[in-house]
Length: 137
Image 1 (cartoon, one colour):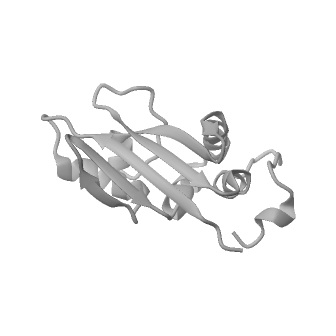
Image 2 (cartoon, helix red, strand yellow):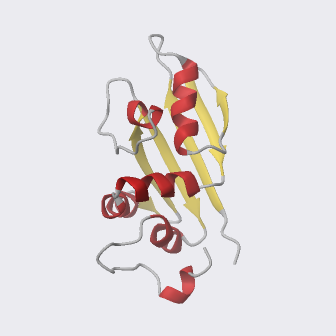
């Protein structure tokens, strides 16, 4: 089964910041993004969630990530914010409106439940989908 994921990231670049460092922060979490600058904001689109998934697993924050992804969902998309500073050092930190601005991430998928189960599997066994729907993803 082919999973169709679309990732959209927006990150403000303030005059006091290095655009290259903001770009690095975005790519540290989502390495396949194609980024362009649009009026003081870096905007990028990509299709791979694997690096984000790996960071979440390495930091052992699956349940927190799962909660954030579920809380931010609207239809077949979920939106969340990440700290630019944390992302710059290959860390996932769900931001709460940092003064420098955050990475605003929107993830779309035809089967968002399966994507959430794959990216942030519950450590207490609660699944959004049946086990056979997420195999091979």
